[in-house]
Image 1 (cartoon, rainbow, N blue to C red):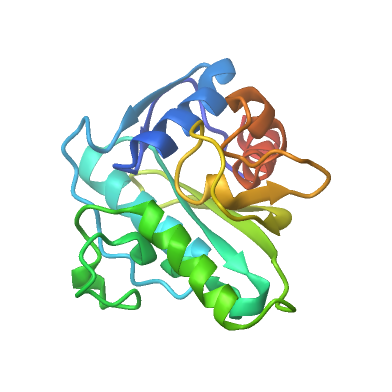
Image 2 (cartoon, rainbow, N blue to C red; image 1 turned 120 degrees about the vertical axis):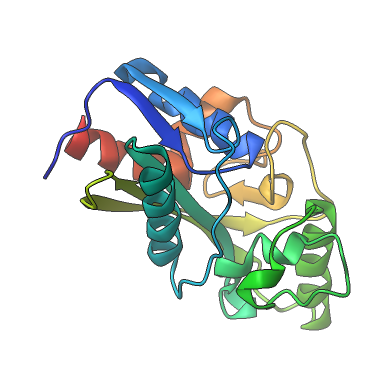
Length: 214
C-alpha cells in the first residue's frame, strides 16, 4: 500500500462544507489541502454504481488534471424504509430545479442544490409510508486517493442513526439536520464540528485512511 507524504493534496470537491470538513480531518497530518474549486478543475459526471465508484472517478480526474495526488469523497444518506435511497443520488435529490429528476442522467446533475428540498422529500416519502415506517438510516462515506500515475487506494466508513423531523441545527451541511447518530440526542446539524468528526461516517473512513496511508 502506497503512503501519502506531506505536501499538497487536491480535495476533489466543489462542496465548501465537505472541503472544510476534510481539511480539518487532514490538518494534523502535514497535508496541505487545495480544493478542486481553487484549481478551477471541473466536476466529472458521477456515473458510478456505488459510492466507491464515484469517489474513484472524481479522484482520478483531479489527479490527472492537476498532476498532484487527489482525494475524493462520495457520501450519502441511506434510509432503510426507502430501500436505502437516496444513497448515491443524495446530492441529486437536492437539485434546486424541480424539473430535473433525482435519478437524472449524469449530464444533468450540475447546478445549485437545495438540501432543505432534499430533506423535505425524505420526510414526505417516509410520511407516505405511514407511522409504522422505520426511521432508521445510515450515512456512508467512500474515500478514494489517486496519484497521477494511476495508483489508487479506497476506504469506506459508516455511521448508523435515526431520522428526525423537523430539521434541527445549522452547524453541519447536507442532510445533517435530520440525522441523529445512534446513542446521541443531537443531530449532526446541532453538534460542534469536533464532536461530529469523532463519530461521523467521514471520520470512520478517515481513520482507516490515516492508519493505512499516513
